[in-house]
Image 1 (cartoon, rainbow, N blue to C red):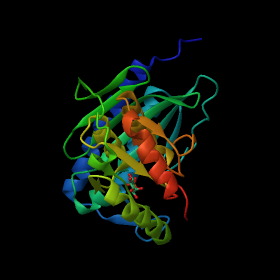
Image 2 (image 1 turned 180 degrees about the horizontal axis):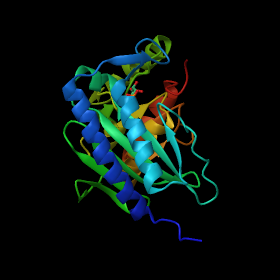
Image 3 (image 1 turned 135 degrees about the horizontal axis):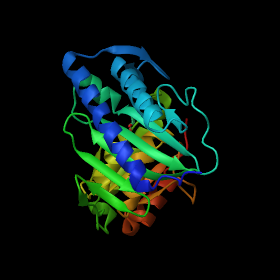
Length: 272
Ligand code: LIP
């Protein structure tokens, strides 16, 4: 029985695959890209590039590690096997920030993570346009372009620059907007940049102080969440729940209580 791959080995595979995927996404953007379909609502778009990049990533992983499982935003698990005990599952967001990608805004990324027994052990987030690359392994730290990352040391919520996002469903957006309207007097300012994986990576290096969002899927969370946690952020849900579709909060330990409690009071994980 071959030895299970180390997190480092899985990270090397993730980086190799994600770099080629980002090249494809960038080339398709330059060639001109259009919406090919909508998903949950008529503003939840998917482009030909989202699909082509995910197929490319899955094909590459199948060549490199034929028995691994995958979970992708566009094709789900496809026909790959489920990952048995000790098995690897790859979690893929081919283009996180698809609306930014469609509009040509340079804030979109390939996000690829390896999970073993339900724990994300390696992850990479690569900006499709700038080439900025964030990596992490569980227990091995987080890096951007080889530089080790440490999150913000901000201790005053009133001075915190906080990022968040909105879903595609209008009723949920109204609820999220109410939460932001109530929160904004209590923080330095809010940033809405449009890609959860990149938001968590910027928070990992202190270019944002904190990030929260309701409605995220496993592929939005996996790689960016590991980068954030390995840079010292608490990545959690509300009231002791794990980070997930109800809410993800990525926050430095010193800001956890004030931001958590305010979001809990504002029912940030509630609503449609
Ligand atoms: C996006 C997330 C973002 C969220 C958007 C969307 P997508 O993912 O990264 O944080 O606010 O509504 O879900 O759809 O571009 O992969």
